[in-house]
Length: 365
Image (tube, rainbow, N blue to C red; front, side, top):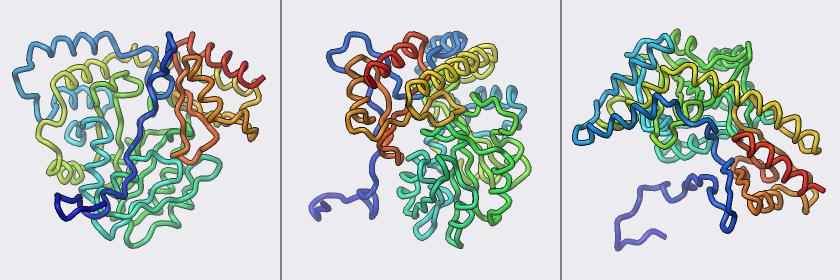
């Protein structure tokens, strides 16, 4: 309740449902496997750890406010112009900055029903209206998005691949979406899981951004690079978008350890490929094993699986979650994303992958 006797948030802030991360602990359980966050079980590159430790000798100095070393490393490995790259405190910060830069009260942003919750939060924080469109079989529906675009639309947010579904939009469909948007509408491609995808019809969005004035791609170091604790994200965007967003960005939004570790991580291509190969092996194995148990699994190209449970109240996702937690396996409830009877399972180390399947087999008996 708003009180006249103390400072009050601006209109709309208290209507925002705060983002709630997945649980991390299982009280009373000796060995816990946290499979509720999409973290890589192989951890970061040893080179990134070395660079992080070396940064400890520079703690008395402000970081480079433009993160030049990190931008140069990204540009070098991705074949991009560093002038079109901006780094942030996770891609979440960059998504928020885009919303603050391009959305105002009365504007609309189009999001999809199972999309990342941050899109809605940042749209509301900017005073704009989120317009949620239906997906089709847990996949982004281009026609539904285009039908929802109005004269008030300023941004369209899509995650490709998507979280928590793990599905993706072939790039011809992304191009069709972009072609159908007015020139003044910004298409934001959140490609947090791009490195995991090994499909011929997928692209993260580099070419689309390079050849257009109204497309942006965001990426993260929290997934394949194993650096979520350092909160590193980056954005590839047209020069006019970089210029506008840079006026709102905090002057030292990335710390020195993050800059150094990120630069080392992105250059260690062998570690990236090892992580991709590990994920591909266990993603396919888990999909097959869970399907054999009679569970429905949404086909995924990311580092997690969306697992659907039976309608039987005794075998529901809620009951499964409680049972798995008691055995030390923490999965992610995804009711807030529109899947009340499903759990998201992140690919973990071998013992966790085998163990969670065995635990689910016992649960379903």
